[in-house]
Length: 128
Image (cartoon, one colour):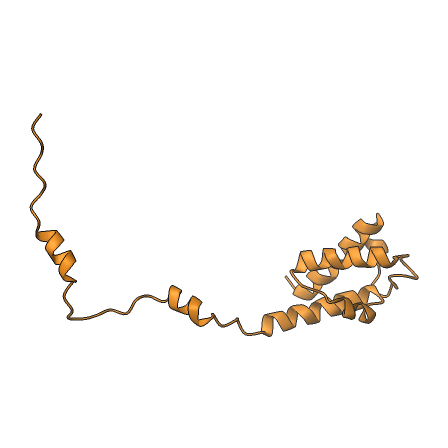
């Protein structure tokens, strides 16, 4: 499945659900405020929904870039592409140390306390 089509379909579906309209009535060129009648609260709720669906965090400063349905789709596609291209975060030294296996110590004997414990005779049972 084409990811661009998914973004467009999911965005249009979210708008249609929010506006209680048919998905086919939501066109790419529709202006969110003028054509679809979204107010500031509707815009914020739409962006929360998009953040949730696409696992993104949209800064408030980016709202000025978004005026049409097509702008929303293009924005989400850019953010998803950037997210996919970003390298995986490096684990911190503390995390790396706790998750890496302990180095093997070839040729070393077990500590004396373990050696002595393994040679002990089993405890005697008490007579009743």
